[in-house]
Image (cartoon, rainbow, N blue to C red; front, side, top):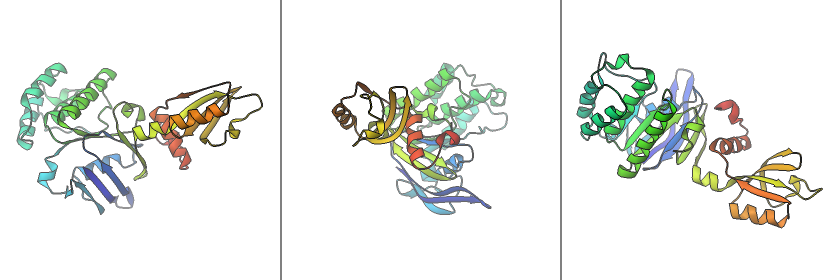
Length: 299
């Protein structure tokens, strides 16, 4: 488990990470969402021990990470800006990582490179951005670490390759309990893979919740009420948002599905149904209540 307690990092007068508290459970996918400059990359550099916190503490199973070789051997960091040795080939990077990570799977590396259609002997500096990302992902999963830190890893990958990488992550989670921590500015990229999502804004975590918990307790309710009845009269429902188009009302409501359905049936509407919300809609609802407009932040 990775735990951040009051973690703060400043660069001169800029507070890049501001007293962040977060818990990342093993075997789950933690999505870190935020705009450019929100502090995502800085948080991952703190978590990977590249940077030392100015305040607070970040640990893996209780062990501090900064200047801790044992702790650093448990994760692989895929940065947004890909870095490889000058004029290196993927095979040469494999040899390097095999020294750093004793569990590095060379056989799997060769297999994935072939499956991805990448030449192991070609200079990486001649690869496209997407190809470099693919090499980084292959090196990361083949290192067989407990944690994989991914900074905008899907950026630059085509749709088919994005789904391929997600499938690889899911497979490793099932087979060896891999824990990916994925930073992205795009909610839609993470909706189908994350278990827990934290929204980072101006260096602090604005919202951090399990997706299942959020999805089970907030719903989109479409209904046509009895003539003369307005949505505001639906007493007992915790209504977050109301939209009306003619006789059709679309409400965002909190509560379990069973509770909402039971209460709505009591009002005897002409029609009603509950529709699952997307991750984007859930975050919009949650942050608007907190006084933020997420559409201006990350969409």
